[in-house]
Image 1 (cartoon, rainbow, N blue to C red):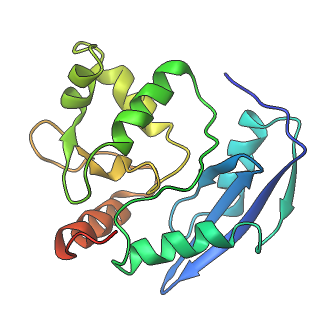
Image 2 (image 1 turned 45 degrees about the horizontal axis):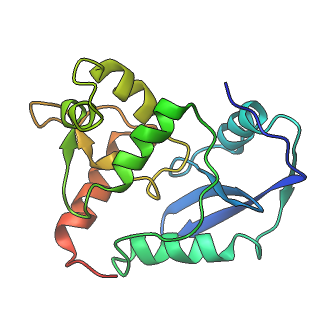
Length: 176
């Protein structure tokens, strides 16, 4: 498990329509995006493990750029993110998350396709576990990964949120 000592991790609660989503960042970039309407403890528990020596401080203005970008995405005005990320994970997890970040807006991939892309075709379960550990929902688009037979599979934000995100992307012409 990677842990990082930081002066502080800043958080905010982004609200848009009927969704509230916790966001957390270090001075290096976005570290966590919570589930839609998820509890504060989801974020606090995640950060306690990955940034164990950091203090957690609310700072809405420091995270405004991330909140604004997420709202633009949810409105269908943004299809990609270029903001800095500060993701804690193993080298394998980071390789999987990087592969996810390259799935084009409005497209999906299977767990098997991601494993093959990484040169580890037999590591489908490990890929699935790394995807499940993705700390930055939406910004690292793990919602674009589906089962081999085309079914929707697990998602930390819940399958309803995954369906909504995929529907949004299929309904909105590519923006930025």
